[in-house]
Each structure stands twice: as structure tokens, then as C-alpha cells.
Amino acid sequence: MSGTPDLAGALAGGTVVLDGGMSNQLAAAGHDLGDELWSARLLAEEPEAVTAAHLAYFEAGADVAITASYQATFEGFARRGIGREEASGLLTLGVGCAREAARRVRVSRPLWVAASVGPYGAMLADGSEYRGRYGLTVGELERFHRPRLEVLAAAGPDVLALETVPDTDEAEALLRAVRGLGVPAWLSYSVAGDRTRAGQPLADAFALAADADEVIAVGVNCCTPEDADHAVRIAALVTGKPVVVYPNSGETWDAGARAWTGRPTFTTGRVTQWRESGARLIGGCCRVGPETVSAIARAVRGA
Image 1 (tube, rainbow, N blue to C red):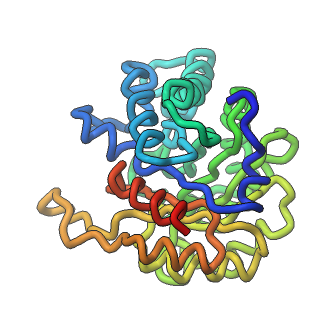
Image 2 (tube, rainbow, N blue to C red; image 1 turned 135 degrees about the vertical axis):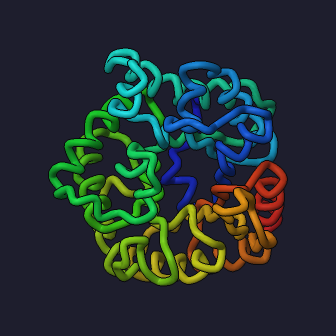
């Protein structure tokens, strides 16, 4: 948005509210996401639905919209017969949908767009983004990510969201790939306990970004709120950077029953705790919708 303050500067002065799960909102609106491209399919088939999802989160109180490009890759689009030129246009459109939602919403606060960059495993669509260790070198992973990052950076987002990263090899590749693009980034791991999904200590994982000038925030997403509690403290201590945190609701997916079980453990009390531990970008991931984002916004702005 024209005249919007720099996001890094906003983090230095306060806390910024992220949106919730894109797939969560699209599914709630009745869209079928049973596809390898997941929410990215709608960029090609129904981009207005993506804009509407962003708008719902902005209206709920989010300051940042994360684009629907998590699973959008040249390789994934190619499997659907979409060539590189069209795929580049769809990646750019993802940023445009978020910008359009920001234009439509009637609020006076600054709004930002984060271009989502999912891990290599998201392109495989086999759950390997929650394991990492794909058998690829850091150089191979960098070559996979760089072309998509170049297109997204050229689309003019405020920040690149390097998210749901499962291991340190992919984090190192992404940190190399964002150099020289002229757009800041945040680096966000998916974790289990006090380790990455691939089993590396979080202190070592976060330390990779400590001296990366492009990285304005480090943290976690797509994990349980309980795992986020510990991770926020480690990220702040190890890097000295603002922390980004957007976990899942806390419910558990039962693959046999094909249903979510348990109760949400994402509470506003946790939001306060995360802020006190150094979190400056706070939102939600899977199963976190506009109602929870509104609660986050009230907790943040009330504080």
C-alpha cells in the first residue's frame, strides 16, 4: 500500500498481527482443497476467493496477509499443464490478491503483504515437508527455491515468508536464495518439541539466521501452541531478532477417522506470553480462523 511504513520498523516499535490459515478460510467458504496444489489451485481457477479470504482476515484485525503461494511452484504447476510464464503470472497474482484485499478493507492502520514460500516438500504433496531431509544438497534446494523467490520478489510484497521449514539444510538454502532480492524475509520453522521436524536442535536452527541481514524475524509456524511456547524464547535468545510465531489451533488430525480431534489450545493468554518472550509477529496457521485472529488483535492492541 502506498505510504505504508516499513514492516521492520513496525516490529521495532510494537507487535504486528498476522492472519490465520488460508486453507482454513477457503474451506470454511465451501471451496474444495483436495488437490496437490491445495489453495494455490484457486489462484488459477478462482482468484476472487483468495482475495475474499484475505479480506476476511484483514477485517478480523490482521495487519499482514500471507499469500496463497505456499504450494505454488513451477514444478507443481507444470504437472497440471501450466507453463512457466503462466505460473509466474499466478505467483504474481497471489501478491495481487492480497494487495486488492488491503485496498478494499476500510481500516486506517497499516497493512502488509507477506509472499509465502513453502518448503520443497510442499511441492511433493506427500507430507515430506513435515520430515525434511529430502536427499537433496543445499545447493540443489537453493536452485529449486531461487526462481520462485525472484518472481515473488518482483511482485512487490513487503516481506517474503520462508515458512514451515523442516530442517536446517533447507533453511540454509533459503537464506542463500533470498540474498540480493531487495525484499526482507522472515524464517519460520515447523517444529516438534525443542527440535526441527528433522530433529535438529532449535538453537542451532535459529542461529543460521542470526547474522542474515535480509531476515527481519525468526520463529515457528504450523506447530502446536505448546511447542511454540518454548521456541519463541529460544529464537529471541539466540538471534536477538524479533520473533514470528503462528502455530496451529492445537487440535490433532486423526487420519483414520479423517477428522480433527481434541480441543484448541491456542489462547490469548499464550499471545501475551509470546509477546513477553519476544514475539513481534503473531498469528495462526492451520485451523486458526478469523475469530481467533480477532482475539489475537484484541490482546495485542489492548496491551
